[in-house]
Structure formats: structure tokens, C-alpha cells
Length: 138
Image (cartoon, rainbow, N blue to C red; front, side):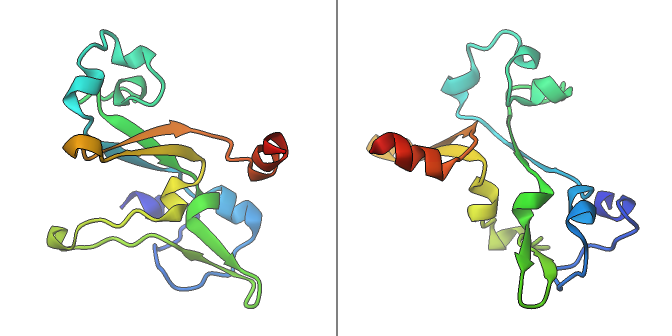
């Protein structure tokens, strides 16, 4: 798998004794999500739209949404043990579904649209600078 090409490191959810520099060299994970059809049907050049799969060269599904999760978001540091642990899990059985937690949402503004049975989610990249948001609110 692609993970094993980095740092000769086998993927695991067990604690790892790695430096921040080593964590920074791990891959950014790209999640490719099917869009709500009405949201991207008007896009004439998906390669020109940030966040769409056309921008990374996907010719089969260029209007899909790409959500990037860097290693600093999915590798959680535990100061007590001075180790990192991957905070995502691969399920072999698709019936279990997918759980996308806070590590997936970090670095993104997320809009949950459930009004009138829309049942869709929107993503945009964000600096998520909580301190400045609080300061601006005062």
C-alpha cells in the first residue's frame, strides 16, 4: 500500500515514537467524495476549480470533491508517552461504513445541510484560527 512507501513505516494504530519532522514526512491523505449533482453540474472546467478532483488530474470523476488531511491532523501526539498515534481506521467490511471525525474536519469549514431532506455536506479549506475568531467577535 502507499503508506508503506514513506519512511519504511508499516501503517498501524499503535503508538509510534516519531519526531515531528518524521510525522511531517508522512503522506497527506486525500479523500475523494461524490458531489451533490446540482452543485457541480455547471462547472465547465473542473481542473480550474480548487478542491475538485479535476485539479489533481482525475479524468474519470473530475467533479468529485477532494478533502486533504495532512499528517499533522491525523497523527495525534500523546505527551505522557511522547508518542504519536494514527487517528483514522480502515474497515475491511464496507458495511461498517465510514466515521470521519475531528481529524478529518480540521483545517476545513464544514456546512451540514439537512434542511428539507437535502442531506449533504459542504467543505472549504480554512485556517481554523480559533483565537482570531474569538478576538473578532469581541
